[in-house]
Length: 188
Image (cartoon, rainbow, N blue to C red):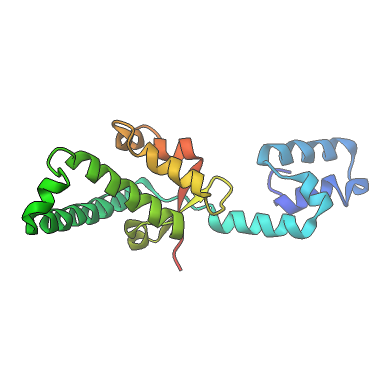
């Protein structure tokens, strides 16, 4: 019975229940539970069940740590260019560095720039320039577009000390876990 498809299992539990013994129906129910099949949705709204099952199979394609590392390198390079450009502009105007108190607040300016870089891009497009480069996007655990709150949480979690090292010990980093998001391959 383990070799049956999800739809065959659901049919044994619902439509074809009379064609099978009680033991076979119970086995099918156990398999459905192990596979995480939504029998309630299947019984009550077949069209929605089929849409969701197809969507999950197409979209649930987590990006590898290698792709995520490339995202990180690409975005870090872009951030370095932006910082260089801003510092060049600030240096071009003698009074601007003093008026902005640039030297005392440099880390704060860079932190705000980094926060804006991720929050704006992921909030609007579900991806940063690095993710565009690798063909990946940010989605919720349910494969939906993240809310602004989830994106802001994701972005804030990037400032957790040693957050980047969390990928060495788990598939998702802290900023994925705490915001309940993930990065998937999404090449068009």
